[in-house]
Image (cartoon, rainbow, N blue to C red; front, side, top):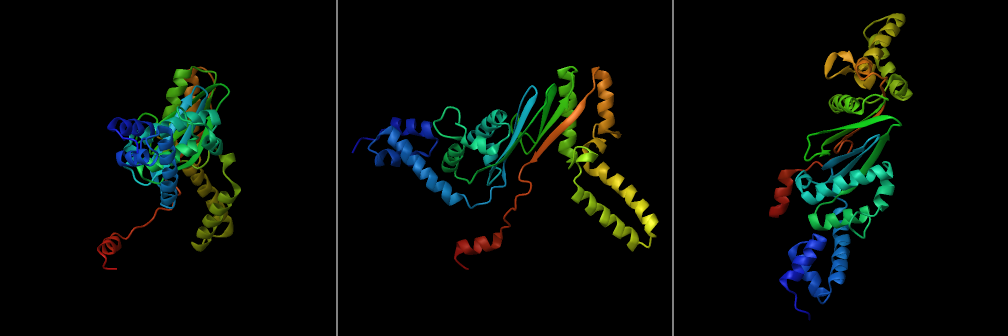
Length: 309
């Protein structure tokens, strides 16, 4: 059996990020062959990842990357918020956000992209991180925005590092105006989106099903209150207008000036910039939104651990 030295263990650990004892075991199992030991750890990592894959991952980080007229946002989940502070995990999310610019937000293409500096794909890098960090992780979603002329601005809320946080927003502004001024305006609107969480860009993009559902609710409420059908219909019109102000970005009151709608703020900014400004799209990723989180009974867990159940 080959002698396993401390420097060999250190070298393997640096190459793989695996724990010291795992590296020592891998080298012992492969007679000190470095590449074979790396493969051994990867196989072990695949096994470890499979065991962890059923656990709920609703924490992690949202990452953003922008380049001129393009931007991408990605969400990578882990089991605990502790992992969000892990430098290896942060570096991975940051790199994936940048790669998403090239894959134009296509999560499946991203998964098969070769991870920089490695011989494995992005998806395989996730498996590697699962094995080394010890938590289930998931590349959950990715999306991108672009404009022909103008800027794609970004904002991260509750930032762990630049471009990484719990809420990520991209805003696409189309204009021939000054890029620096557009970027400032775009960030302000992105901050508004983070806070107000609009569901639609403009009135025309409100889906029919959502609108019909709201109208039916308002009409039933008015009739239940004893209003005549014609009065009830008028009340519905007013309530729908209020509904638009709550869920449509361009109809919302701008958080930077709650007396002005976002649409009016854009018109005002266009005069300062010297060119028309059109908000063509936005993306908002909130960490863990829509994930069914596991409800744990702490007392039951303690009892089980103590062997009383």
